[in-house]
Image (cartoon, rainbow, N blue to C red; front, side, top):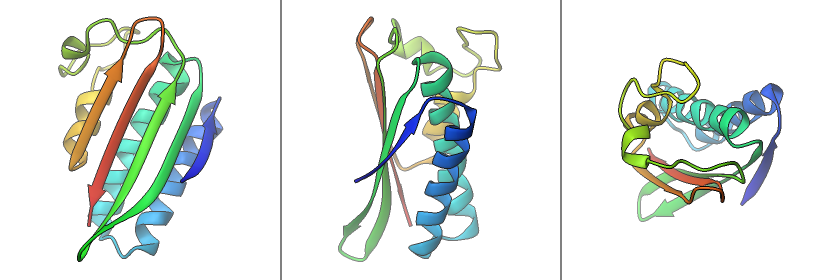
Length: 129
């Protein structure tokens, strides 16, 4: 797995660009590249804004004829006290639009989130081509 540290806004751009480039190298369509890049941008931004920094790991998956991009986001921030609430459109803990987590979930094929208050958040996504 490759890894990108996410400490500032520039790192969010690096994560988005890496996801788009890897998807492009694997022959993903323009729409699929846009979806993975947008999801990565939202999740990396959450690591930066809510998680006091962290990292994204990513890799190419192969299952038979399917090719996927797997990304894992990890932070050591305060965590999410109520994941169900955080996954609802419009919910925000910092006065944003509240589309980040639920929007990212809609853009990918597999979405998993785990959080323990005081111990950070871990989100994993997969986008298949």
